[in-house]
Length: 332
Image (cartoon, rainbow, N blue to C red; front, top):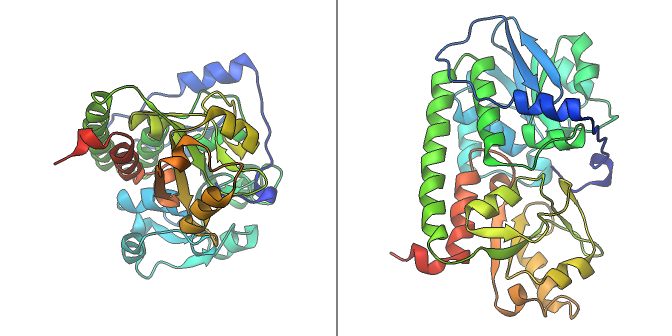
């Protein structure tokens, strides 16, 4: 996900058959080893793998983080879309080592073919755009198989609201594709346990706190609807996204709507050329916005892009949000 007009083209398919197919494909893999050929459900497609990919490329920092967490660096020839958006922690950069960044933003077909890639882990508005040059359909004839980030499927099909199960599903499916299922299952269970512990503390500290997600934008804010992962992260942290009734993923809304819903806290997504401090200053200095409870009571929560988008860093995001929403529950 990135806030660029060119990357926000969306196509929605709304048939009941697609929704039913999505739900039927939602079961996480529990096997200990992959038997090839194996078929994986990716959004509204089936993708068959004759063996584990050997020359993979991932786009965006959160997807790349999943690959690294699963120990798949030796199966990768590079990654894309990190430095151009000013994302990525020092820890991740150290983990990537000498693995090259093949494109600072979205890669071209030529970039992927030039690296002799056999697998592309990306998503809609996470390295691909509807109707764009790089899609599963354009890469298939070139021998490059694509697995799509589950959260992003909202841009090409009707699907349920985003949940942490989306992240677990992606990790499990990557585990199956690359024959590292035991590692994937262990990572999923570790994440589940940590999130359960955070959510349990937050739940004992009163009713959910209303939260607005501020990604970017001044005339109209770019934010997260019910089909974007921050809604699930906020819920796990003992909050409620004030835009959780918006049947959309990452999208723009009107400031009038935000003010009317008067959030008690604001999550600022930190990335790009506009800093979190500058975004906060904009909210404070704008007389049309600084009357909201979140601004008056200084309840700003800065969450790095890596943490606010689907991936292994979501545990850290939930902890960060929960500690601000329910400070009493997290006192030493």
